[in-house]
Length: 156
Image 1 (cartoon, rainbow, N blue to C red):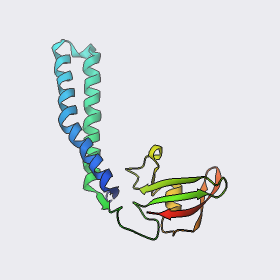
Image 2: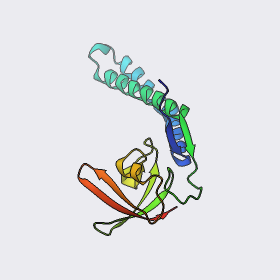
Image 3: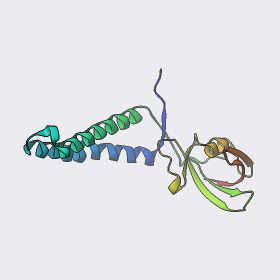
Image 4: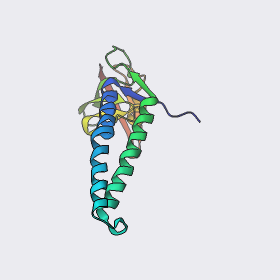
């Protein structure tokens, strides 16, 4: 089975590469030092410090493997390209048709999604519904709470 393609913006790629570098250099060294220090305390069979350090080491190594796999399968999208329809990398202004609120979102790949900073996944219900639509279109989104209706005010 082919591995899943990871869609990233240039910013997303840079963040993943930075995280990988920190894990491979700083974090590996820190946890190795903690393990060495815990071993020096003696009997490791009842040493919680040793167990904690080994668990952290396993987490770091797992995260490194995950990041390397993501970067290997990355497809970089150019979010500076002007388009007249919503695509991954687009920043869009939406008007909620029920409440009249305007919100701005950037459509990103699932690896970069962060709703706290208005980056929504292309695989989320809202992201998926908006893809391919043009400015001025009213889009209906089926979500567990019902149907949301948005007008696409602007695409950048």
